Length: 334
Image (tube, rainbow, N blue to C red; front, top):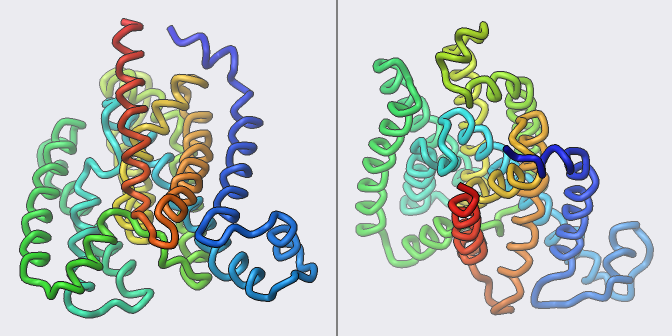
């Protein structure tokens, strides 16, 4: 029995916002040019700065990118916790249902065709993810849409998209293929005010839909038969959770490429510290996911500055060992 979560049930509302603010501060400071904190604070509050370039760096480059990282990290964290509950599989992540394959195929198709306008690549990625999700659900629904058929359908669709993706990369010009590979590894450099507003609104609506279904998720983790016996319309709840979690994942991939381990590791850490109740798990996973991606992006822009490492590489380097530690802890605990 998890008593840690019960003892510390309310602490997440203090600890995680503080971590988010610390991650935001680090993201605004990190980069090839280390700005003094006085300059950063002056730029954020509208006071005069010693160099107008500093204000431009903070307000036009780092702040939009940090906002994008927070939206993407929160989306992946919340979607990961929802899919782990929906599929009753602690190893599930937001990409398990073919979302990553469909989004990658759409984005890479746009890039290799030379259509790399700021709004086109995210739009193509989102369209590919939506089509993949729709196809997964239709295939699984023909077989009662159980968790097992959802996973198998996602694997099938993801494999098919991966095959087409490899074909596109193999036949693409070298420059287009290199750009596509960087995007596939996670890329937050496309942050723009024009994308942030719609992305944040979309994520907020999808998250609200998930949070309203938190009691249904709690029931479904006990098994669909038990949930049905307790009065839950399992088919309706599954569809709503699938759509909301898929929408969060699709928008995150469309905006930032494939950023791994956020949606896999973050819900595990939150569940271990604050318990499995989804009313708490969903917002806590969103906050920790945002903080984790902010810090990871800051490291990605600093470690080889002025060059930039794909943020997905950093999340994997931190996430994989931590996930192994979590698995070891679970095995040790029985």
